[in-house]
Image (cartoon, rainbow, N blue to C red; front, top):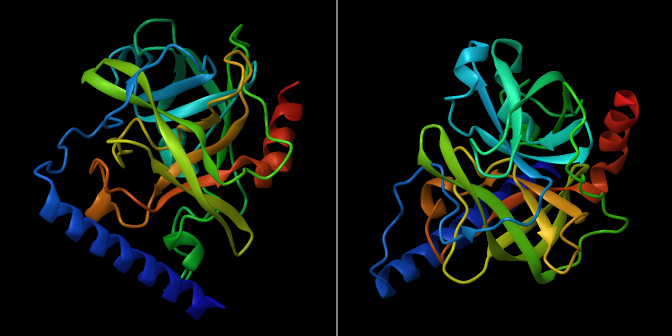
Length: 274
């Protein structure tokens, strides 16, 4: 089973490399150098539950801290994000914000719960769960409930198709970032050793970035009501970051943790916060 998984990863990485190589010959558009940008996304005031995280050594530093990762409100005082985004939560102060960065007061993070099967460090010389970022999910409790309507958890597996919006943040300055979105397609679903994920490809001429601001960010059904959209997944990274990261129109292998497969974990965090 382990050999099969590694072979699959290598095959997909090679496939992405060939796609990128072909695209490079037919377009003059090079890689985008901006770290904190959902490339090709447009400013979007919808998806009120979609927000961002900042961190700093002191409370005074939070207001000027850049967007670190995306996060989504799933209860008035609980947000969900990628576990690898908040590994420094034990040593620094964290806060959650909604809307454009700097447009509203930040809410301090007062608790963190990382999925028990996530490996922050390799446990063996060949720890597949670590290298594939299995179960890369964390919930955070914030200091006080917000009035922003939280997103809903899905009742069924996310269908393959293109009826989705990927949300991220585009940074203008170190303390200012605009929430943006782009159309997106769910290409396929897969379960890697109990870790339910799916692949997302941004539509049109857009791309997600491995840099701060996009990882941990949500994928919503674009047909959902804007006030209580279904959170289908959160972006945790790309297997081929060095080849396709931030490259418009050529990006593949964007991994999203599927919220349907983690409903129990997220619901437990919500219940504990009550």
